[in-house]
Length: 398
Image (cartoon, rainbow, N blue to C red; front, top):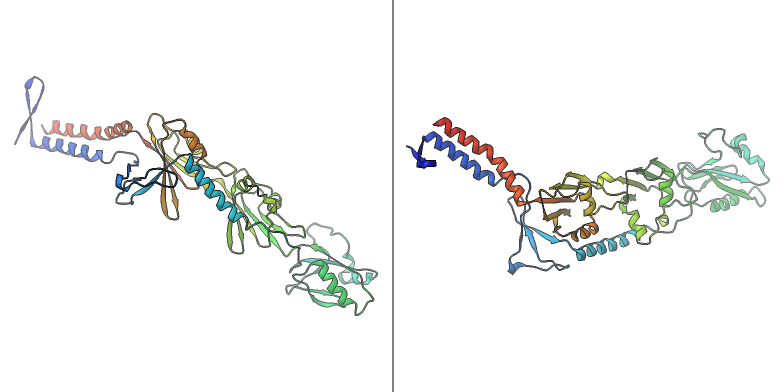
């Protein structure tokens, strides 16, 4: 079986059956490749008129078309009203959580392992209980402080007084209790008690600080800034908006710049025994920038933890003006296992003001779609080898 193909000058070229088969395969490849154009695509369509909804900020509903892998996802248009709404929600949430952390510091109470220095006035013989080192400074920094150690049961052992339960008492309460015990043997004993070494209570600072480790709590209450300063301060890679406080099995995130912006002084946040502060690195809170940008990759927040849509685009080398469809810019966010998609039409330079105010969240995905012409060129680049292969097969078959 043969068929004719019109040529210039009305001449007919005879093509054999194998050649026709090769041409058909090339055509099949052409059609299939049209459906798998390289690159991602965000097919956004408006809702049907009968199903259109108006959200809280006044945008008309639209959605990303459903596929076999994902359901239809609503799309929220980015504008100034939405930015202000999201900022207000974040502020309310911050205030409600931050107030739980601020409390008045309590007086220091003695615990297991603390070393007490005790003086009974006009009775120097009591110094012999610790030898000649009582009242003398340690010769080395590593030497333990001279004094009476509170044992594992929380008891203090002192001559004539015996074992006194002192765990959880203030030094003035220990003085009173010790003087009462000694009054059985001494006339109106005058006793002075102070903590020579604080070893029972510690807090821990970890992560992006210069000197992470354990810090001892003393009779001077330790606030948030004290702990960071004693740990050497924030490192260059620290995200000051993501400091995690673990207290009693509960986790609380501390956003230092936001606290200050809302008039809450972090120096009023006092630490308690066993607290753990962890300063996260900025890379942990990066976002992904994909699509038609000059340098696709991740974008990290500033040291204050803030990363706006404009910041992310700037770190990605800005939008590729040759290939991007500036009307199709998206932010994809996962919240409680559900996807949220925000859309920004950036054809107008004014829209960049919205991008400058829209704060991204960790692990957000910023995607800039490609233009139709670029997508067509990519399809043709993919198809030309198939077309040439089909024509070559036809010539060989002839």
